Image 1 (cartoon, rainbow, N blue to C red):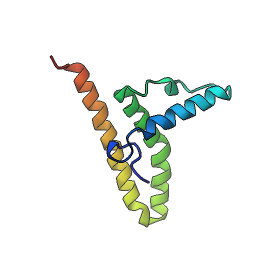
Image 2: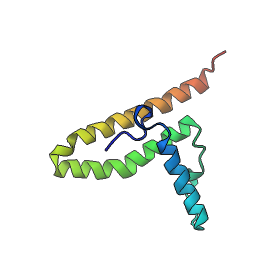
Image 3: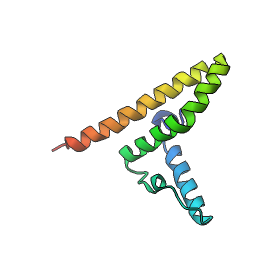
Image 4: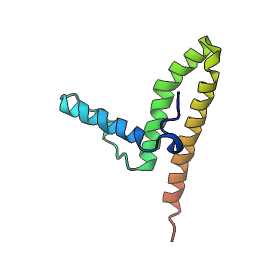
Length: 102
């Protein structure tokens, strides 16, 4: 697993995936999940989307696989680093909103 959502490795890719899936669902007439109507330009909302995806989709899969195949342990560590990155991003945006620069 690479750190696709991390700015240093894949700036811009994650929002593109969300937009692509959202547009595809709409074009197919599939009801879009409420979270897919988020503003992908809003860093706090984007961090929350990433955390939800990692915690509820990626982590269960990678944790089970790393338990079965110990060679995948570095990927589990990378996932934990990615989760921390987005937690910090979410918190930094909250801090910026609470204490705007004058």
